[in-house]
Length: 394
Image (cartoon, rainbow, N blue to C red; front, side, top):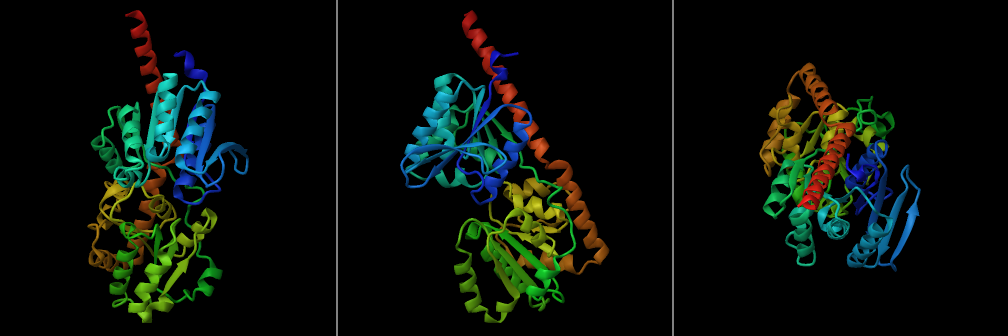
Protein backbone atom coordinates (compact mmCIF):
# COMPACT_ATOMS: atom_id res chain seq x y z
CA UNK A 1 0.00 0.00 0.00
CA UNK A 2 1.41 3.43 -0.89
CA UNK A 3 2.46 5.41 2.19
CA UNK A 4 0.01 8.20 1.21
CA UNK A 5 -3.03 5.91 1.50
CA UNK A 6 -3.99 7.28 4.93
CA UNK A 7 -3.77 10.94 3.88
CA UNK A 8 -6.89 12.96 3.03
CA UNK A 9 -8.18 13.93 -0.40
CA UNK A 10 -8.81 17.61 -1.12
CA UNK A 11 -11.88 18.46 -3.18
CA UNK A 12 -11.92 21.98 -4.63
CA UNK A 13 -15.21 23.33 -5.99
CA UNK A 14 -16.57 26.67 -7.23
CA UNK A 15 -19.95 26.09 -5.52
CA UNK A 16 -21.31 24.42 -2.42
CA UNK A 17 -24.60 24.83 -0.53
CA UNK A 18 -26.06 27.20 0.44
CA UNK A 19 -25.07 28.24 -3.10
CA UNK A 20 -27.96 27.53 -5.46
CA UNK A 21 -28.00 25.27 -8.45
CA UNK A 22 -27.66 21.65 -9.45
CA UNK A 23 -23.86 21.65 -9.35
CA UNK A 24 -23.75 22.78 -5.72
CA UNK A 25 -26.19 20.02 -4.75
CA UNK A 26 -24.27 17.43 -6.76
CA UNK A 27 -21.00 18.35 -5.05
CA UNK A 28 -22.67 18.20 -1.63
CA UNK A 29 -24.09 14.76 -2.40
CA UNK A 30 -20.70 13.47 -3.56
CA UNK A 31 -19.01 14.98 -0.50
CA UNK A 32 -21.45 13.25 1.83
CA UNK A 33 -20.75 9.90 0.20
CA UNK A 34 -16.97 10.33 0.15
CA UNK A 35 -16.69 11.51 3.76
CA UNK A 36 -18.15 8.21 4.91
CA UNK A 37 -15.21 6.38 3.34
CA UNK A 38 -12.12 8.60 3.54
CA UNK A 39 -10.75 11.77 5.15
CA UNK A 40 -11.75 14.69 2.97
CA UNK A 41 -11.08 18.44 2.85
CA UNK A 42 -13.67 20.49 0.94
CA UNK A 43 -12.52 23.89 -0.34
CA UNK A 44 -15.11 26.15 -2.00
CA UNK A 45 -13.89 29.09 -4.10
CA UNK A 46 -15.97 32.20 -4.64
CA UNK A 47 -15.53 35.44 -6.53
CA UNK A 48 -17.34 37.96 -4.32
CA UNK A 49 -15.61 41.29 -4.85
CA UNK A 50 -14.40 41.25 -1.26
CA UNK A 51 -10.88 41.17 0.15
CA UNK A 52 -9.33 37.68 0.18
CA UNK A 53 -10.40 35.55 3.13
CA UNK A 54 -10.56 31.92 4.22
CA UNK A 55 -13.34 30.88 6.59
CA UNK A 56 -14.69 27.59 7.88
CA UNK A 57 -18.39 27.15 7.22
CA UNK A 58 -20.48 24.66 9.17
CA UNK A 59 -23.87 25.70 7.79
CA UNK A 60 -24.20 22.32 6.08
CA UNK A 61 -23.57 18.76 7.26
CA UNK A 62 -19.98 19.10 6.01
CA UNK A 63 -17.39 21.58 7.25
CA UNK A 64 -16.22 23.59 4.26
CA UNK A 65 -13.23 25.88 3.86
CA UNK A 66 -14.57 28.87 1.92
CA UNK A 67 -12.08 30.96 -0.04
CA UNK A 68 -13.47 34.35 -1.09
CA UNK A 69 -11.65 36.97 -3.14
CA UNK A 70 -12.28 39.96 -5.37
CA UNK A 71 -11.25 38.05 -8.50
CA UNK A 72 -10.86 34.49 -9.64
CA UNK A 73 -7.11 35.06 -9.92
CA UNK A 74 -6.90 35.94 -6.23
CA UNK A 75 -9.17 33.03 -5.31
CA UNK A 76 -6.89 30.68 -7.24
CA UNK A 77 -3.83 32.03 -5.47
CA UNK A 78 -5.48 31.63 -2.08
CA UNK A 79 -6.52 28.09 -2.94
CA UNK A 80 -3.00 27.16 -4.04
CA UNK A 81 -1.47 28.36 -0.76
CA UNK A 82 -4.22 26.72 1.27
CA UNK A 83 -3.61 23.37 -0.42
CA UNK A 84 0.10 23.67 0.30
CA UNK A 85 -0.43 24.63 3.94
CA UNK A 86 -3.02 21.94 4.71
CA UNK A 87 -1.26 19.15 2.83
CA UNK A 88 0.09 16.65 2.31
CA UNK A 89 -2.80 15.05 0.48
CA UNK A 90 -3.00 11.73 -1.25
CA UNK A 91 -4.89 13.23 -4.21
CA UNK A 92 -6.43 16.52 -5.31
CA UNK A 93 -9.78 16.80 -7.05
CA UNK A 94 -11.09 19.90 -8.86
CA UNK A 95 -14.71 20.37 -9.88
CA UNK A 96 -15.19 22.47 -13.07
CA UNK A 97 -11.70 22.58 -14.59
CA UNK A 98 -11.89 26.18 -15.79
CA UNK A 99 -12.65 27.49 -12.28
CA UNK A 100 -10.55 25.17 -10.10
CA UNK A 101 -8.18 23.35 -12.45
CA UNK A 102 -5.18 25.70 -12.41
CA UNK A 103 -4.64 25.98 -8.61
CA UNK A 104 -5.31 22.24 -8.26
CA UNK A 105 -2.83 21.42 -11.02
CA UNK A 106 -0.16 23.71 -9.64
CA UNK A 107 -0.53 22.43 -6.07
CA UNK A 108 -0.52 18.80 -7.21
CA UNK A 109 2.58 19.24 -9.34
CA UNK A 110 4.32 21.08 -6.49
CA UNK A 111 3.55 18.23 -4.05
CA UNK A 112 4.05 15.42 -6.61
CA UNK A 113 0.58 13.97 -6.05
CA UNK A 114 -2.03 12.98 -8.65
CA UNK A 115 -5.03 15.14 -9.41
CA UNK A 116 -8.45 14.61 -10.95
CA UNK A 117 -10.63 17.16 -12.75
CA UNK A 118 -14.39 16.75 -13.16
CA UNK A 119 -16.43 18.52 -15.81
CA UNK A 120 -20.15 18.52 -15.03
CA UNK A 121 -21.85 20.97 -17.37
CA UNK A 122 -20.94 23.44 -20.07
CA UNK A 123 -17.70 24.69 -18.52
CA UNK A 124 -15.43 23.07 -21.12
CA UNK A 125 -17.55 24.20 -24.06
CA UNK A 126 -17.85 27.73 -22.70
CA UNK A 127 -14.42 28.47 -21.32
CA UNK A 128 -12.21 26.93 -23.98
CA UNK A 129 -13.12 30.03 -26.01
CA UNK A 130 -12.71 32.51 -23.14
CA UNK A 131 -9.33 34.26 -23.54
CA UNK A 132 -9.18 34.93 -19.78
CA UNK A 133 -9.63 31.26 -18.84
CA UNK A 134 -8.43 29.34 -21.87
CA UNK A 135 -4.72 29.01 -21.03
CA UNK A 136 -5.29 27.90 -17.43
CA UNK A 137 -7.95 25.44 -18.52
CA UNK A 138 -5.79 23.84 -21.20
CA UNK A 139 -2.80 23.63 -18.84
CA UNK A 140 -4.89 21.89 -16.18
CA UNK A 141 -6.39 19.42 -18.66
CA UNK A 142 -3.04 18.61 -20.28
CA UNK A 143 -1.35 17.70 -17.00
CA UNK A 144 -4.26 16.03 -15.18
CA UNK A 145 -3.78 12.42 -14.16
CA UNK A 146 -7.46 11.91 -14.90
CA UNK A 147 -10.37 13.91 -16.29
CA UNK A 148 -13.88 12.81 -15.45
CA UNK A 149 -16.87 13.81 -17.54
CA UNK A 150 -20.41 13.63 -16.19
CA UNK A 151 -21.43 12.81 -19.77
CA UNK A 152 -19.67 10.93 -22.53
CA UNK A 153 -19.80 14.08 -24.65
CA UNK A 154 -17.76 15.92 -22.01
CA UNK A 155 -15.24 13.08 -21.99
CA UNK A 156 -14.88 13.38 -25.75
CA UNK A 157 -14.46 17.14 -25.49
CA UNK A 158 -11.79 16.80 -22.79
CA UNK A 159 -9.78 14.61 -25.15
CA UNK A 160 -10.20 17.09 -27.99
CA UNK A 161 -8.91 19.86 -25.72
CA UNK A 162 -5.71 17.97 -25.01
CA UNK A 163 -6.25 15.89 -21.88
CA UNK A 164 -3.46 13.31 -21.86
CA UNK A 165 -4.30 11.36 -18.70
CA UNK A 166 -7.06 8.89 -18.05
CA UNK A 167 -10.49 10.04 -19.29
CA UNK A 168 -13.46 8.44 -17.58
CA UNK A 169 -17.24 8.78 -17.56
CA UNK A 170 -18.70 8.88 -14.05
CA UNK A 171 -22.39 9.85 -14.07
CA UNK A 172 -24.08 11.64 -11.19
CA UNK A 173 -26.40 9.77 -8.87
CA UNK A 174 -29.92 10.59 -7.71
CA UNK A 175 -31.31 10.22 -4.19
CA UNK A 176 -34.18 7.82 -4.84
CA UNK A 177 -35.38 8.07 -1.25
CA UNK A 178 -35.97 11.80 -1.56
CA UNK A 179 -37.10 11.77 -5.20
CA UNK A 180 -39.95 9.26 -5.35
CA UNK A 181 -43.54 9.03 -6.60
CA UNK A 182 -46.05 10.82 -4.35
CA UNK A 183 -49.64 11.95 -4.61
CA UNK A 184 -49.99 15.42 -6.16
CA UNK A 185 -49.93 18.33 -3.74
CA UNK A 186 -53.60 19.35 -3.38
CA UNK A 187 -52.69 22.89 -2.35
CA UNK A 188 -50.68 23.48 -5.50
CA UNK A 189 -53.39 21.90 -7.65
CA UNK A 190 -55.93 24.32 -6.23
CA UNK A 191 -53.68 27.39 -6.34
CA UNK A 192 -52.73 26.78 -9.97
CA UNK A 193 -56.23 25.65 -11.06
CA UNK A 194 -54.81 22.33 -12.22
CA UNK A 195 -57.39 19.89 -10.83
CA UNK A 196 -59.14 19.49 -14.18
CA UNK A 197 -56.11 20.24 -16.35
CA UNK A 198 -54.61 17.62 -18.65
CA UNK A 199 -51.84 17.22 -19.47
CA UNK A 200 -49.56 18.98 -17.03
CA UNK A 201 -46.17 19.38 -18.68
CA UNK A 202 -43.01 20.20 -16.74
CA UNK A 203 -39.94 22.03 -17.99
CA UNK A 204 -37.08 22.81 -15.65
CA UNK A 205 -33.44 23.81 -15.62
CA UNK A 206 -31.53 26.70 -17.08
CA UNK A 207 -33.53 28.99 -19.28
CA UNK A 208 -30.90 29.96 -21.84
CA UNK A 209 -31.79 28.88 -25.37
CA UNK A 210 -29.21 26.05 -25.52
CA UNK A 211 -31.04 24.53 -22.56
CA UNK A 212 -34.32 24.38 -24.40
CA UNK A 213 -36.91 26.79 -22.91
CA UNK A 214 -37.59 28.40 -26.28
CA UNK A 215 -38.02 24.96 -27.83
CA UNK A 216 -40.36 23.90 -25.03
CA UNK A 217 -42.55 26.97 -25.49
CA UNK A 218 -42.82 26.42 -29.23
CA UNK A 219 -43.71 22.75 -28.66
CA UNK A 220 -46.30 23.73 -26.06
CA UNK A 221 -48.02 26.04 -28.53
CA UNK A 222 -48.28 23.10 -30.94
CA UNK A 223 -49.53 20.75 -28.21
CA UNK A 224 -52.32 23.13 -27.18
CA UNK A 225 -53.93 22.71 -30.59
CA UNK A 226 -54.75 19.13 -29.61
CA UNK A 227 -55.00 19.61 -25.84
CA UNK A 228 -56.45 23.06 -25.12
CA UNK A 229 -56.52 22.26 -21.36
CA UNK A 230 -52.76 21.60 -21.25
CA UNK A 231 -50.66 23.53 -18.76
CA UNK A 232 -46.91 24.14 -18.74
CA UNK A 233 -45.06 24.46 -15.42
CA UNK A 234 -41.66 26.13 -15.80
CA UNK A 235 -39.12 26.43 -13.01
CA UNK A 236 -36.22 28.81 -13.37
CA UNK A 237 -32.71 27.53 -12.82
CA UNK A 238 -29.89 29.60 -11.35
CA UNK A 239 -30.05 32.00 -14.32
CA UNK A 240 -32.74 34.68 -14.34
CA UNK A 241 -33.63 35.11 -17.99
CA UNK A 242 -36.82 33.02 -17.88
CA UNK A 243 -39.07 36.01 -17.33
CA UNK A 244 -37.88 37.82 -20.45
CA UNK A 245 -38.17 34.68 -22.58
CA UNK A 246 -41.65 33.95 -21.26
CA UNK A 247 -42.76 37.56 -21.61
CA UNK A 248 -41.73 37.63 -25.25
CA UNK A 249 -43.57 34.35 -25.90
CA UNK A 250 -46.75 35.46 -24.11
CA UNK A 251 -46.75 38.74 -25.99
CA UNK A 252 -47.12 36.65 -29.16
CA UNK A 253 -49.54 34.16 -27.54
CA UNK A 254 -51.61 36.12 -24.98
CA UNK A 255 -54.29 33.41 -24.91
CA UNK A 256 -51.82 31.14 -23.08
CA UNK A 257 -51.19 33.38 -20.07
CA UNK A 258 -53.38 31.28 -17.79
CA UNK A 259 -51.82 28.02 -19.03
CA UNK A 260 -48.17 28.74 -18.32
CA UNK A 261 -46.97 28.88 -14.73
CA UNK A 262 -43.54 30.23 -13.87
CA UNK A 263 -41.98 29.08 -10.60
CA UNK A 264 -38.96 30.61 -8.92
CA UNK A 265 -35.99 28.47 -8.04
CA UNK A 266 -37.17 25.72 -5.67
CA UNK A 267 -35.25 23.81 -2.98
CA UNK A 268 -35.12 20.06 -3.42
CA UNK A 269 -37.91 19.24 -0.98
CA UNK A 270 -40.27 21.41 -3.05
CA UNK A 271 -38.95 19.99 -6.32
CA UNK A 272 -40.29 16.57 -5.32
CA UNK A 273 -43.80 18.02 -5.03
CA UNK A 274 -43.34 19.81 -8.36
CA UNK A 275 -42.36 16.65 -10.25
CA UNK A 276 -45.33 14.79 -8.80
CA UNK A 277 -47.76 17.31 -10.31
CA UNK A 278 -46.68 16.37 -13.82
CA UNK A 279 -48.01 14.00 -16.44
CA UNK A 280 -44.91 14.41 -18.62
CA UNK A 281 -41.52 16.04 -18.11
CA UNK A 282 -39.67 17.74 -20.96
CA UNK A 283 -35.93 18.28 -21.29
CA UNK A 284 -35.30 19.43 -24.88
CA UNK A 285 -31.77 20.68 -24.24
CA UNK A 286 -29.56 21.08 -27.28
CA UNK A 287 -26.52 19.94 -25.33
CA UNK A 288 -25.55 19.50 -21.71
CA UNK A 289 -23.68 17.44 -19.20
CA UNK A 290 -25.70 14.89 -17.24
CA UNK A 291 -28.88 16.78 -16.26
CA UNK A 292 -29.84 16.00 -12.66
CA UNK A 293 -33.39 17.13 -13.36
CA UNK A 294 -33.90 14.23 -15.76
CA UNK A 295 -32.71 11.76 -13.12
CA UNK A 296 -34.96 13.39 -10.52
CA UNK A 297 -38.05 13.37 -12.72
CA UNK A 298 -37.52 9.72 -13.62
CA UNK A 299 -37.00 8.82 -9.97
CA UNK A 300 -40.34 10.49 -9.23
CA UNK A 301 -41.99 8.23 -11.79
CA UNK A 302 -42.51 10.84 -14.50
CA UNK A 303 -42.17 9.87 -18.18
CA UNK A 304 -39.41 12.00 -19.70
CA UNK A 305 -39.16 13.19 -23.29
CA UNK A 306 -35.66 14.51 -23.93
CA UNK A 307 -33.17 15.22 -26.69
CA UNK A 308 -31.11 12.39 -28.10
CA UNK A 309 -27.85 14.17 -27.35
CA UNK A 310 -25.40 14.82 -24.52
CA UNK A 311 -26.11 13.62 -21.02
CA UNK A 312 -29.75 12.79 -21.63
CA UNK A 313 -28.65 10.19 -24.18
CA UNK A 314 -26.29 8.73 -21.57
CA UNK A 315 -29.22 8.36 -19.18
CA UNK A 316 -31.85 7.01 -21.56
CA UNK A 317 -29.95 5.00 -24.19
CA UNK A 318 -30.63 1.31 -23.61
CA UNK A 319 -33.48 2.05 -21.21
CA UNK A 320 -37.17 1.24 -21.75
CA UNK A 321 -37.68 4.99 -22.25
CA UNK A 322 -35.19 5.23 -25.13
CA UNK A 323 -38.05 5.40 -27.70
CA UNK A 324 -39.14 8.69 -26.10
CA UNK A 325 -35.96 10.49 -27.12
CA UNK A 326 -36.26 13.06 -29.91
CA UNK A 327 -33.86 14.82 -32.30
CA UNK A 328 -32.33 17.93 -30.69
CA UNK A 329 -33.65 21.35 -31.57
CA UNK A 330 -36.97 20.07 -32.96
CA UNK A 331 -40.12 21.46 -31.26
CA UNK A 332 -42.40 19.61 -33.69
CA UNK A 333 -40.82 16.27 -32.73
CA UNK A 334 -41.25 17.16 -29.04
CA UNK A 335 -44.96 17.94 -29.51
CA UNK A 336 -45.59 14.85 -31.64
CA UNK A 337 -43.85 12.50 -29.21
CA UNK A 338 -45.88 14.01 -26.36
CA UNK A 339 -49.11 13.46 -28.31
CA UNK A 340 -48.22 9.82 -28.91
CA UNK A 341 -47.49 9.32 -25.21
CA UNK A 342 -50.69 11.04 -24.06
CA UNK A 343 -52.86 8.99 -26.43
CA UNK A 344 -51.57 5.73 -24.95
CA UNK A 345 -53.70 3.84 -22.46
CA UNK A 346 -53.13 4.95 -18.83
CA UNK A 347 -51.67 1.52 -18.06
CA UNK A 348 -49.06 1.99 -20.77
CA UNK A 349 -48.09 5.42 -19.46
CA UNK A 350 -47.84 3.91 -15.96
CA UNK A 351 -45.42 1.35 -17.39
CA UNK A 352 -43.16 4.13 -18.71
CA UNK A 353 -43.24 5.79 -15.31
CA UNK A 354 -42.35 2.62 -13.39
CA UNK A 355 -39.70 1.55 -15.89
CA UNK A 356 -38.01 4.95 -15.77
CA UNK A 357 -37.77 4.92 -11.98
CA UNK A 358 -36.38 1.38 -11.93
CA UNK A 359 -33.80 2.31 -14.56
CA UNK A 360 -32.29 5.30 -12.75
CA UNK A 361 -32.56 3.97 -9.20
CA UNK A 362 -30.53 0.88 -10.09
CA UNK A 363 -27.95 2.52 -12.39
CA UNK A 364 -27.50 6.12 -11.23
CA UNK A 365 -26.98 5.99 -7.49
CA UNK A 366 -24.91 8.28 -5.23
CA UNK A 367 -23.14 5.23 -3.83
CA UNK A 368 -22.06 4.03 -7.28
CA UNK A 369 -20.82 7.53 -8.14
CA UNK A 370 -18.70 7.74 -4.98
CA UNK A 371 -17.37 4.19 -5.45
CA UNK A 372 -16.22 5.05 -8.97
CA UNK A 373 -14.28 8.05 -7.65
CA UNK A 374 -12.73 6.03 -4.83
CA UNK A 375 -11.57 3.39 -7.30
CA UNK A 376 -10.15 6.10 -9.55
CA UNK A 377 -8.27 7.75 -6.65
CA UNK A 378 -6.75 4.39 -5.68
CA UNK A 379 -5.66 3.63 -9.24
CA UNK A 380 -4.00 7.02 -9.67
CA UNK A 381 -2.25 6.84 -6.29
CA UNK A 382 -0.97 3.32 -6.99
CA UNK A 383 0.25 4.36 -10.43
CA UNK A 384 2.07 7.38 -9.00
CA UNK A 385 3.63 5.16 -6.31
CA UNK A 386 4.91 2.65 -8.91
CA UNK A 387 6.41 5.46 -10.94
CA UNK A 388 8.14 6.86 -7.88
CA UNK A 389 9.61 3.47 -7.04
CA UNK A 390 10.74 2.95 -10.63
CA UNK A 391 12.44 6.35 -10.72
CA UNK A 392 14.18 5.74 -7.40
CA UNK A 393 15.48 2.35 -8.60
CA UNK A 394 16.88 3.88 -11.77
